[in-house]
Length: 167
Ligand SMILES: [Zn+2]
Image (cartoon, rainbow, N blue to C red):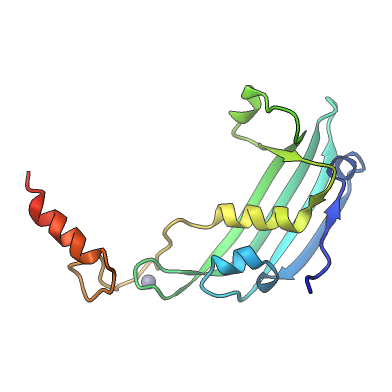
């Protein structure tokens, strides 16, 4: 049984300047937990709605937490601090995004329907923020196919390429 979500009408949420703040175990975010080394810890998040003078609807999102990712060098656990602040402009999902808005650096467009699951939004933001190839700062495990034993099926291939590809 899945825990109750935080599903809102996003435009109304913004119009009413609503806000929610919660803490939720990482284990409760299935997709996120699946991308991590383990599901220890919790995410603290807050979502705040706002409508500006131009009638634009915004969500201000903040997500923090300490996650356990996998060091891509030694493949062991690595604590990684997540800290995301996002400014999201709500646009109806059936409307085409204006070109200029897509190029904006300070905020992102968020196409939304009549219902928006804030927990899903928080999870998406956390997933987007995950480091691509995290490593321990002082990781001393051997790297590369020549540095040590490896079970990667591509290790042999890499060596082969290196030998063949001279100059
Ligand atoms: Zn490491």
